[in-house]
Length: 475
Image 1 (spheres, helix red, strand yellow):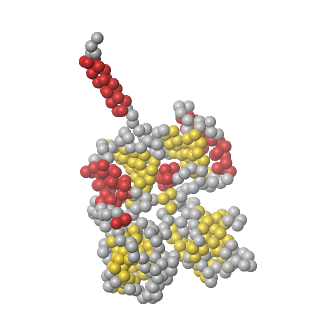
Image 2 (tube, rainbow, N blue to C red):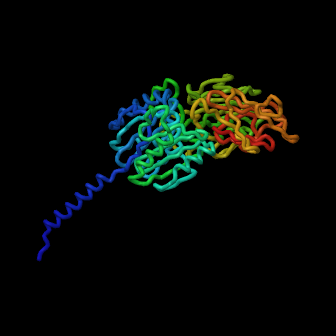
Image 3 (cartoon, rainbow, N blue to C red):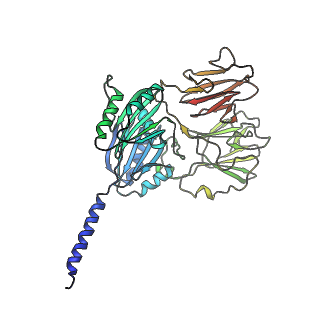
């Protein structure tokens, strides 16, 4: 009997059609993140319109934190924007979210096919909670529908913890936020306003147990609430008129140190500031007597980048003119002693940092990567000031005053006792959202994170050692 090739062909065609249908419906289950309000309803992503759209929402973020979501059937991107600049970006292909540099994010977005875009407004607490969930590893992770949530919540309350508890199942995310043992917010899909008498804890439990009837939840507990921005996050210059994508696809500014017009080393500018001086604690160390101990600092501001002289003995010169403070533009030359420091602010994509000449090192320059820390902790509200945790007696001191004094003096807010304790006095001063620790007097400086310092803007978990006493800065 001869094979019926026509029937075989029809059979194979049917199989191919079935495979095509199955493939069509193999969609990634998109995570619906909690939000406060929709600012831009889901619509088709238009690459030609994206730059102006992004610029608009960057301006909106000066008043309200927001999250931009760009997605199709197979991939989901999230961009967090706050205070007039993109803050952090991530991507998921269905399992977990992975952090991206802003350059990676914008590069991938340009190549995305037929995605949709939606923009959400988020309160600061919700915004921060989402970042914690997406960035941090949980202290506790239980995959079960039978986990005793009541015990976990009781323990968090009794220990006065600031924590985030999340319940996740594919496509669904619920979050319960604690501040010092008190439930302050519950988030699921749209975070609707609720009556003052509503029980936040019960609200969370009811939602979890209701949805658990369909499939188990993954329960996570986070107590490390410090979050980070993307490594290349930086503000747009004031009155910026160019392409936002080109700005973030370009490299961060670079600081090139030269001697007799010969490049010695190049530093990428990825933090808030870079200090220049003779002491080893500076970001750029120049071991030369013509350079003061902490000679100058280059800072990132809302108006752009600027150089400040720190009262140096021999002065700081910008393009041949002595300055105390001045904004910087691409190609500016800062002269300190015999050294030239060139500020480079690229405006288009360039070769990678690996191609830069970094072979000649002057004495005591840091090796690749100056010390830095981009960890940040948002205050949950203006009413929750940060604290100093004293390790010797497990006591917390609230930094609610404009200035907090630490030392042996009777008038000190935090007293250091002991016959052999050093006679060092410090003050911690609040400036906006920053807290700065400074040495007032004493033969030795306090040791912060293992390094002697006279002054520092405090970051989450900074360890301040004064003799045998140790304090940890916590937000």
